[in-house]
Image (tube, rainbow, N blue to C red; front, side, top):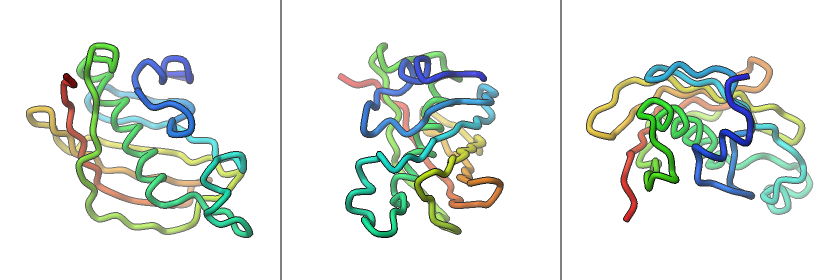
Length: 147
């Protein structure tokens, strides 16, 4: 294990119910990250999406991927939210959903750096469950100093 939840909380400003990365298993600074999100029926969004057929909203799968990207960015440049920095999700391209994510699934989040320039990062991302692709996307994040 590379990062547990306590270290993840140092690198992401998100908190319940919006912290969507539970563990980082692999991290190669400036290159790639592999993380997990354990999907539980206790997630608050399942109350309304959908009560009789619970599915994790696609936008939250994208958000989980973006959070993994943020961890990779922060670790690469050796900065923390506590230092006054944040990674914003600023874009997504070529998003495709291939299968639903449901309670009990362990969502594997993978991101590879495509390029970075002046605080703008582009990642190739895949979210999968048991080796089956749930979502593919290119995600763009921007590192910014908050006032």
